[in-house]
Amino acid sequence: MRELEYINLSAKYADALEELELSVFSTINPTDLYDAAELTQLAMTFPEGNFVVLDGDRPIGMGLGILMDFDFEHTQHALSDIGGVEHHDPSAPWYYGTDISVYPEYRGRGIGRQLYELRKDCVRRLDKAGIVAGGVLPGYADHIDAMSAQEYIDKVVAGELRDPTLTFQLENGFEARGVIENYLDDPSVGNNSVLIVWENPHHNPRPNPTLPELSLRPSTACWARWSPIRKNRSASIQYGATPRSAPGLWSPGCGRQAPQPGPKTTTPSKRCASWWPGTSA
Image (cartoon, rainbow, N blue to C red; front, top):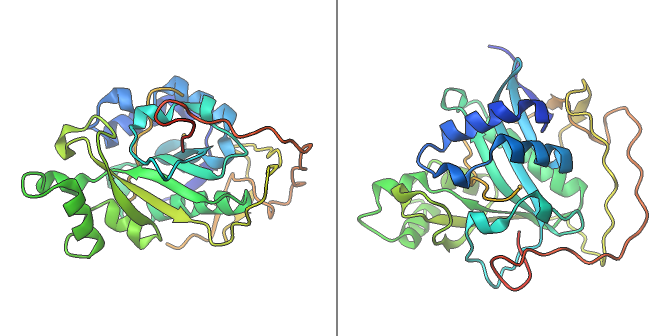
């Protein structure tokens, strides 16, 4: 069994990653998933916050997201309302997780957990407030005629039921903060999702934060230290050890000169106006 490699998102894998997502999310309308053009644009915009898992040269998993504002007073939204990479705002406080996909034959090897650790490491390094996402509820399909989506979520949180995705997210430090209705086009679960949140315990809020320009080379053999285009983004699936190191990722421990902060700016955060008056995630 070959060792898997974790790298930052690269446009060279866009076609293969589109195929991966279509395979993993077979019950979801493809218009709610990334296509190759959107993946290419995301790779050009925010590679340091997006991750690909390689078996040799074959992508077998990915974890994607963008930085956005999120209005916790108005949490109901559709995945398609999040918007695309044009809503990625480096000064925004939240990392919105748009996709975690892993081929079924690779599950159980800790890939999902490592992808979450990479996301958390990105959030800590950029000093963001945390991670927010709409998590899919694949297990709800077996209970949809017996209970509401919120009742199902409550039972999973209480440990009375186990969901392949939500249970994993809870075990990785996320909180379930209620059902998101009509989040994506997936009739098998009544189009429902769950709002999940991980708060960065080391976050130090400061006014008008300025982020460094991160210079990445997605496929370089640099060993890192471990410590969201328009229509849609597929919600997070996590399948299951503790990572030691991963090649191809920029980190302060890389050995290359760290990127230097850019000039200070007071430009206010962009906000997505498509699903509440002035914010997104």
